[in-house]
Image 1 (cartoon, rainbow over the protein chains, first blue to last red):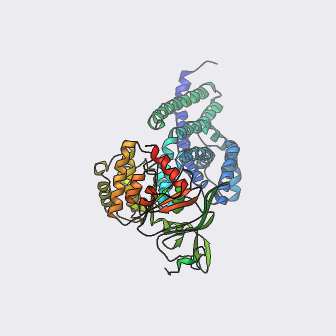
Image 2 (image 1 turned 45 degrees about the horizontal axis):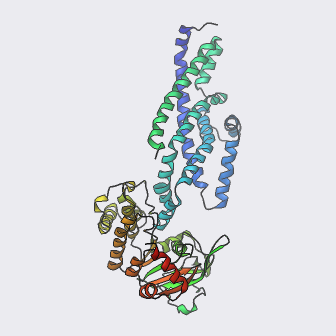
Image 3 (image 1 turned 180 degrees about the vertical axis):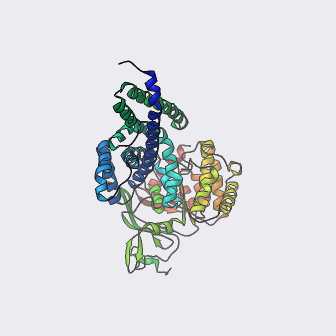
Length: 217
Length: 275
C-alpha cells in the first residue's frame, strides 16, 4: 500500500474535527479532575473518620479500576438507574472522575508539604477553616504541584481515544470511520498518530515553561 | 460569668466557668506517648501579668504555650482562660468536650508568636497582618489596613508594607509576626522562643519591640525564652521548669540573683556560660 497524499488531504478536515472533540473532552475532563481531586484531597483531611476513610476508599477504588470499565459503566449501566448523559458528557465525567483519583494524590502531597507551622499560625490567628484552606494552605500547596498536575493533562490527552468505545466522535473515532468507509487505514491512522505527537510535544513545551516558573520555588 | 471561690480549684464548676480572669492550670498532665511532658501542673497568671518560663529544653515550657493556644490537648486536668475551660463547655445541664466554636471563642483572647515566625509566604507583609482582622473580626479593608500600618510603625517596619516576607531578614519577619498577632488585639500574648531562630545581631531589635509593647500595653504576656536580660526587664514573675514541673518561682530579681533551687542554679550557670 502506497501513501496517498491526495487522500490524506481530503480526510484531514474530518480528522481535525475529531481532534477538536478530543481536545474539548480532554480539557473539560481535566477541569473536572482538577476540581474533584481537590475536593477529595480536602475531604481526606476531614477530622471526621467516617468522611476521610470513605473518601480514601472511594478514591482507591476509582484508581484501581480501568478507565474503560468506568466509561462502560457510566455509559451503559448508569442510564438504567435513570441517569443519562450524552456520549461526550459521559466521556468528560468519566475521564475527569478517573483522573481525579490521581490529582487528589498530587494535591495531597502538596498539602502535606505545607509546613505544620502554617496551620498553627492560622489556628493562632483564629482563621475560619475555609480561610485556612483557601487563603493559606492551598495557595502554597497548589503552587508546588502545578507541574505535576500539568503532566496529567498530557496523560489524559493520550487516554482520550478510549472515548471511542462509548461512541464519542473524537479523533480516533473519526479516523476509524474514514478508514471503514474507504477501506484505507494507513493515512487516517498515521495522521492521528502525527496529530497526537504534535499536540503532545506542544503541551510538553508549555509544561516545561510551567516547571521553570513554578518548579524551583 | 459567675464568680466562684478559686479555692475549689480542681473541681469543675457546674457551669463550666471558673470565675476568675486570667489563666489557670489545674492539675494539668500532658503526655506524648510514654513521655510525660507536664506532671500535675498547677499555676495561674493574673490579667496583665508578665510571666517568663525558663528551664532546660524538654521541660515542658513550650508545651504550656501550645496547650493555651489549643494546638495541643491536655490529657488530664483543666486549663482555664478568662473563666472558660479549654477542654469543656456547657451544653444544657451537662459538660461536654469543647467544640470548634468554643475553642474559637477562647482563641480570640490569645495571640501567639512562634520561634519560626510562620508568616504566610503567599501574602505580602500587609496582608499577613490584615488577613485575620478582616476575616475573623470583620474589619473593613480600610480599617484593617490602617490598623496594620499603625502596628508596622510600632515594630519599625513602616516601609515594608508591600514587601514579600521572603525579602525580609529573620528579625524583620519576626517583628511582622508580632504585629500580626497584635492586630487581633489579644488579651494574652504567648511568645515561644521568639528570638531563638534569629542571628545574634537581630535579637536586640525584636526584644526592643517587645519591651515597648510590655511598657505601653497591659497585655498579659507568657514568654518562653533564653534571653535572661529580657526576662529580667519585662517580667513580673519567673517560673523555673524542670521535667514538667515548676521547681522554683519568684521575681526576676530573686530567681536570677539568689536562686534557691540547685537545678535553677545549674540551669542559669549553663545558660549564662554560653555567652
